[in-house]
Amino acid sequence: MKKLITALLVLASANAGSAAFGAQPAPTAAPSPRPAAAAETLRPSPATIEQWRDRKFGMFIHFGLYSLAGGQWNGRRIDNGYSEQILANGNLPPKAYAALASQFDPVKFDPDAIVALAKAAGMKYIVITAKHHDGFNLFGTKVTNYNIVEATPYGRDLVKELAEACKRGGVAFGVYYSTIDWHHPGGNRYIEGNSNPITPAQEAFNVAQLKELLSNYGPISEIWFDMGKPTPQQSLHFERTVHRLQPETMVSGRVWNHQGDFTVMGDNAEPSVAVEEPWESPASMFPDTWGYRAWEVRGDVSGKIHEHIGRLVRVVSAGGNYILNIGPESDGAVVPFEAEVLHGVGDWLKTNGQAIYGTRAQPFKALDFGYATVGPHTLYLFVEKPPADGRLRLPGVVDTRLGDAAVLGAPGVSLPVSTDADGAVVDISQAAGLGGGFMPVIAVPLEGALHVRPKAVAPDGQGRARLVAANGEAFLRHDGYGYADPPKIYKMGWNVGLGPGRYVAAIAYKPVAKARPASLVVDGRAYPLQVGPSGHAAITIQRDPAASPYAMRLEITPPAPIGRADHLPMVVRSVELRPN
Image (cartoon, helix red, strand yellow):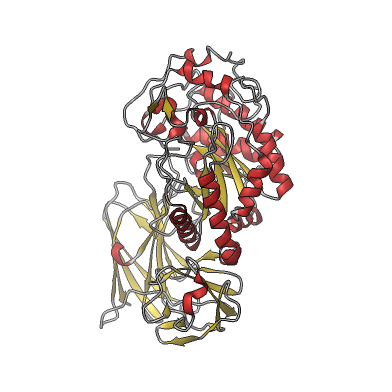
């Protein structure tokens, strides 16, 4: 996870980390594949991607030698960063930290009980830290003896045992893998933002371990790469290594350089704009750490349950998956507070899970009462703030047949649904308590497809419309060249209240020195667009109500086919539409 301290910290000399644990012969550095290899198509199938998206809720586990330290060293609390990064945060002697392995004996880590807890919480997948930034391995790697099998009294492959328990329990299994490694002779220092370049020796080391994880631990549903600043060729090398062994494994975006199969939000972050590709929001129980912290003030269980139910709902209603972390104690026991929170979320999901799993994002820009998801035949409404008048307004619903609504968990309660020129309304005024629980869910049956008229930019009296960033929406590409690389706009879009006919689109943009292609897409039809030093372009377009019946849909994108790393070649200032 991202490092919070800002000072450059040298952890050790090149050989200090290997003094206690003899380094194995370094794997021969294999050359990174050339970028031209990107034409290779070993990627998860559409069916696999849909299965991954349908799971919605998973368990993250941060566990390792740092759990033994528990966020403190020699009686001193280390509070300037995540506790799993105490080696760097506390400026600890690397030999002393590595010596923790001789005490690491997590006899209370019960893989089957972990799986049972995940299932009780309603979680459909588990991801565990096979190796974190400190370089200690929870699996029986042959590349270094700095691992749980060879270096600890525990002497067992914890990752393998959890993988087998997940298989027995019918839960998808994945692994977290830190691209950086503070124990490796080539990378044993902290760099601001954990943006360490990856040396050729580290690259070969990582590839050798990836081959072990993808060959010896059964099906891996996802591999959660994290941090570092690999070159584009190295990111491609890591992705290719995974997919050549298991093509259906979902690779996280933190492999960087746009080589992931799903986008990862920042730590404990949710997107502020639409994300079209598969994405996941990683969350810790408390924002200040992912690994176990002995002195954490855990406080109000009920409030924490409500917090994570609310975050789960927000993420899923925006189209993402939510992975919530636990940090077991040094002996492997789950922190009772964290188990209680998970059981509380699971109790809510027992009643309301059908509104979460297998659903898709809400089609509404915003709802004044809360959030929504869409199932195959049902619209689900999450009531966070019940309106004073008892009316849940669904703006823009049109040409849709809706049945009477019900409250999940409250059999026999029927709520009337009506429609008018503004959309649809669900009347909850007579539903006392809405089932009595936190964040109640209303299920509205759909008889056919759900249609929503988007809020559109209105033309003036002469049939002209002016489009700017403030009345449109930006779509972002994440997971670029490292954690600090900001997301980039790859598409701008607007809904415009114009009728049938031909229009001239006059586009103003910040001039670019070199001519580059782009595309103007209107109601699904692409018009070639060339941008350059002039800062202006004009194109005659045709409105197609059959393709987009409720409003003109206008988008500016890179030219097709749009690649993973493509983004807009210019900054759009405005689009002026006028009848032709």
